[in-house]
Length: 182
Image (cartoon, rainbow, N blue to C red; front, side, top):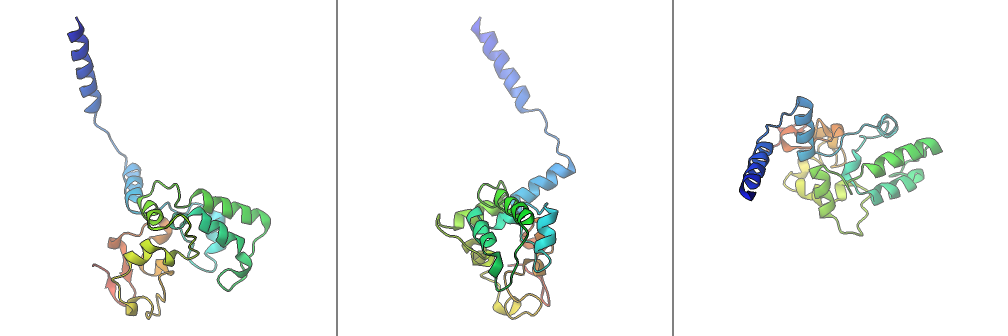
């Protein structure tokens, strides 16, 4: 008598495991982004305030401890005074910290975190070991000495979907050079 129960369980389990899963275009797009990118920027306040001076960097490119230190030093933010009113400061800080690389489900954010030691507090994305390693084959003449790029911190010069959190190699177009393919 216990064989029919086991057989029924096996048939039921096999049936459940073979149910086709259907993904919408949005689901596929989100899965692809998670597999190659970092979380996109969805805070209008952050985007407006920070992109007035530089690219609004996706928060998944740094750990929370880095964003905390950056936000704590806005009065001398890389040579400029970027102080904010208290409400805007809190809004942006919360966005950056809650979407940082620490607990991200996005693959690139997880790789960035694995490249850091527990005590590392990089203040520049371009100083993280992962980012340095990803760009080590690109000659200085295409980045540092390219007037349209100038440094690794100018992500959107070559990564046309950087603010959307997409940094895959197939989307790289270096100004004055063209598509990069190593």
